[in-house]
Length: 433
Image (cartoon, rainbow, N blue to C red; front, side, top):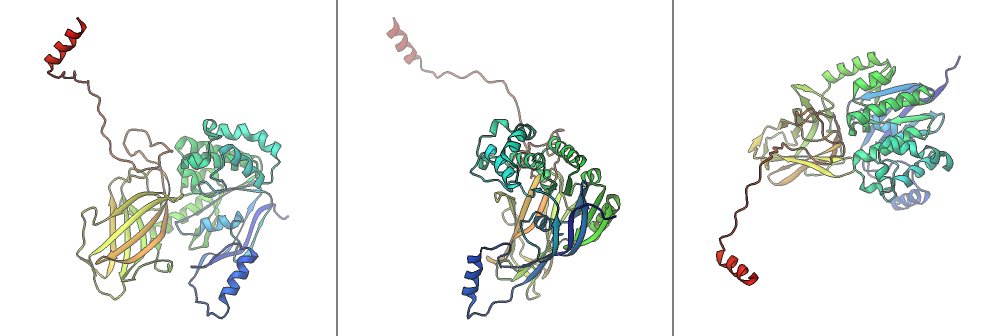
């Protein structure tokens, strides 16, 4: 008897030619590209398979976990499943309407209010206006944003974006709900609320695809999961077995590889080879707010000679493109006169000052004042919520800045000292008499 599959992926692959437009194009754009290329020899572009030869199925009503290290191909796969980008090879079949929450703010129009975006998202899902209106109060109450529902969403924090985005995706009754790592932006109470909602969606016979580094959440929600690495499927089956494979893979991996990236700038005097996150002496995927974090940046010089006077910069951006934190060795008073031709430079943070959320890391390096390498989006990292202040409480999920050590005191106000102006006092008294 054939099973009722909600999702079928057969030999799916996604090829990127770095520096080339990908995705759907207008006919005018295609014709323009062809005309511009006439009589010119087209340069050979570096090819990169983000996903390759991937096949799997998800049954109707199943909650299916997708896990993997940073750069494993999870986000690319979800974009193909959500029809944001087409596969290069293979086929994806989806049976039913799809609601997706892939990044904070996905599907929202920044100039529209929260109310207007609810109706816009419902229309995109093909839902009648009266059905959206019937669900409206339930969505707003879940998001806890009634006070701001008529405010343009461009003024929302990432936490507010998340609340509304998840509420819309989960309450407008899509047949298939796809949820990426964005739940990490919310506070613990809201995460639990979202988990409960996803359990309800699954119990109603709808399908959930859940991507997360939160292994406890994956274990709780998903009876079956799939592990990706390097764009390929490594394991698929009962979640406990897949998680065991994930942990084994984590212990033996060598970090996020950058050596094949060609979309970079600089002279190439030295190049970044890989980025590795560590905490407590071991490699990690998900750092925690307030905990120790090391960012090891592996490099190699072009000519095999030592690198003179390098400067290394690590910048953290939100997924919405706002610069949050920038670290640079010379600014911090750690100057290097010379480093070996090959090795790693490590940025150590005794207490990670970033609130919970998703961040993009850019890397740049100079030598003798010349830019040697500059890689944007070198890594994407999810920071898990932690107790930065050791107060038993976590930072507000609306925070959009770094956390800092704080000292607060309350003091009794001293009595103000009056100026010694007795002549002026006598003059006033004399005027009153």
